[in-house]
Length: 380
Image (cartoon, rainbow, N blue to C red; front, side, top):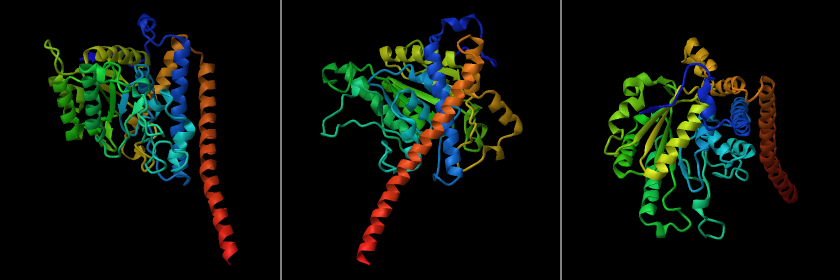
């Protein structure tokens, strides 16, 4: 079991300089994405609570882990995940803020993922072009269509990873789909859903088959309002999975542990582990701990009703975006003024994107209403 170097304060020691994301441009880009995603979450919650959207499920608290994961992606990789991965989609440039809000409003025209038919943060990418021909999946980032049932992504992720293994065994059949089986499948799941049977079936099968499956568990300590002490043995999924860990015979899976707020540690962990997986096809579980949830589980509830004041104060202190900003300033990668400028700019960008998406959706409805009214007037 590999654990990233984390402390309960931002790491400003000499080790930071040796970690991958030390160039200023990369760090600033990732921090901006984290802030943009967080502001989109804040606006989305407001839009639902003011009645302009019906329901929202968002990915606050997972921003830093997902920009770190995105750095390990390569063309041809696949994601089979669930409804907390908006930051990853932004980091891979597979979604714009306008599209995020179009899905929130249920816009059938401008929601590119489901045409307004699914709740927000359900993603997909096409595999077939408009002319009916296969798109070159090995040259693209690929998203398997999300499904609502938690845990439903697991078996699909296993199948996609098994396909990568088969293409390595038969490289001549790769064509537009695979580059010698070098593709990794990223599977994301919440900690509570690891209690489902399909999670265990998938982990076991991945270890038996030895496929390039990277399972990231976002662990915020709760399944909606239920603490993990009531649903996970030892309250620690990676501890429970130790029996699956690869030994001297190299079978089984690798287990990595990271803190959701430790940007440099997460970047190093994901990049090194995923490159190892591309070569060996040994699956891995990434247990991302100390995830916070500043806005609660969804727009249908208020986490202040079931979290203690101490827990809420801890979540504020260990907000991953806040911790990343502190690390950037302490490491000399940004000034406090630059941090505040980015926050203000992304707050404005998120608000403007929501307004554009709302106007597009309602302008289309208003246009159809006018046309219908004109027809009624003509037959009167």
